[in-house]
Amino acid sequence: MGVIARIVSLAGAVFVLAGCAAAPKDELVDKRCRVARVAEDVAAGRTVPMDALGGLGNPPLVLMSSGEIEAVANCLGPALDAAIARSADATIRTTRGWRPASRTYMASEHGMFLQVFANAAAAEYLKYEKGARLPQGAAILKRSFRVAADGNVSAGPVFVMERMAQGYDRTTDDWRFAVTAPDGALMGESGGRDAAKVAFCAGCHKSAQVQDFLFFVPPRQRVGS
Ligand code: HEC
Image (cartoon, rainbow, N blue to C red):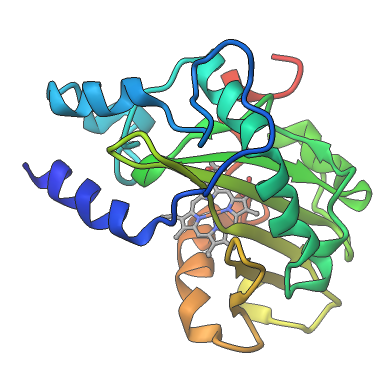
């Protein structure tokens, strides 16, 4: 019941995409990009076990097949691109064309699905744990969408980490953390506006300090895996 209660409270916060330009032919999602099967799963109590993410954080809301993930990502494409194009964060606005570091969107907490991208200066990030410390100008981004308990989907926030000039922030080894909402509004930026709202980013990423504050994409999701 705890999981369901959390699901329901989250579903309220999610705006439902009011129509999608091109529904994929395979019909895994309907015209609103909705995944009807998800609602059936949740109603039947088929929820995801706590250890689904290796014990880190909360479980994803629902299990989705790779076909369903791809269908939603395609259907939501225009909304996901718009979240980038109108972002209040100048770095996020430059991210079209960055290289993917995860093969596709991967299940994360609270029904969120994430895909990771790296800019040219962050080329070493694509070597994962074997990469060198990332240089100034390196930036890594996560695009996201959410799948609610009723199967409705929506574009999610965009997360970015950017290595700033030396001396920017000694506590984060000069990483800047920022997150923007699907409508492009800035939700918070470390060292900038609403910094308190994103203090938890550095708080968690600090536990990966030995590998440059980076957690990396899980091995089976990596490009080329
Ligand atoms: C509870 C821990 C936790 C918090 C809080 C957190 N992250 Fe992460 N972050 C992770 C984990 C684990 C990964 C790797 C898996 C993934 O991508 O989901 C990650 C990956 C990332 C990446 C890709 C780079 C990497 O580390 O491999 C970016 C960018 C990122 N997070 C930004 C943020 C921002 C911005 C915030 C705050 C709004 C934030 N994170 C909050 C745990 C966290």
